[in-house]
Image (cartoon, rainbow, N blue to C red; front, side):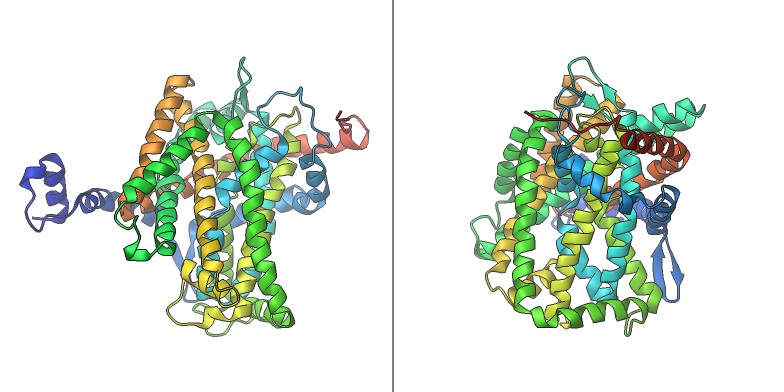
Length: 503
């Protein structure tokens, strides 16, 4: 009898379980595994170029970043100064429609992307692709700023503002409403529903269970490992986290924004300071590290796939870290208080810059400078921890706190993404809203108590499947964004868009 059949029988009738019957976790994994493998093989389908596996989803994301960068005249560079001015409130009018400030919207979106990808994912890229992967990671991060600009501009332009002041926005709305304006209503609706379904799946898995599971593992590791009081009490840790998450998300985007605007800067500063301390200790080795990064980017040695291999590792990590093109961030940015859609596009430019260009680069530099990437048997978060601990023995404790805080903030933001996708599918009312938030909190506990590898693989596929619908819509709606940008810049130069004088 196959493992799949045994798992199904055990789920339907647990009394049929025999001594060698899989555990409950294994039963669920067995049921989901065939689906997860099929979906994952499609979403992450790769072609081999010069011995390097090139995932087509990464190509899909990077090509879009190139296109929008050139299409909008390098808006990622020429718009950087304006984005700083907007974030600090120079053009913020509290009377504008919306629920959160520009800074709060940015903090919320950043909290959804800054996380284990910056800590463990970068280590994977450097371990496999060598120091040169860092160069291509930075390059891809700079390009992806343009993609964020486009999707977040559209998010505000086509958002729904309700009578009570609440807002719903994101790809679901600009795909359905924007494409309907172009006479593509059916296509827009199909893409919007597809996106929303994938967003709900990604929210519960990668944006929830994976985060709570990794936070739990790090907490156990620094509190005694197998001897820790919490070693066999994942449910208790999960319950505490679920309660904390529930207390925040029950208040909606305003409550989430109030927490993330304090939590995200604190996390980033803590992590960057630790990185700067190590870079200060090894200050004389920084030039050599940059030399390794640049030479490794164009003439890598000992890397599978050579130049193509190291390039793909850098592009892949950037794409997986900042989520530009996924469309998730547009949901958070849509809630901003503004009457100018382009203004939030400028704000969104900073997200990949903070996530990839700053935080990911800090991680990579420390790993390269300390030389820990050359150690056998180290990868992921272990490599990052070892690199920092080689100079700061107490850093693993800081890393554990960072992982837990990163995971917590990511769960807050993805709960909002999932809620908006859920209510788009099942109705914009408080009952549907509360139902999803309850489901989300239950999944926080499940993430700490179950090892659902197949479920998480499936949810990762769902997150990147969001990009299939989103980027297709971005291409079709790109002319609208270009007109919005031209109008905004013209009015800004003419003095029609003035700085708001705060009391």
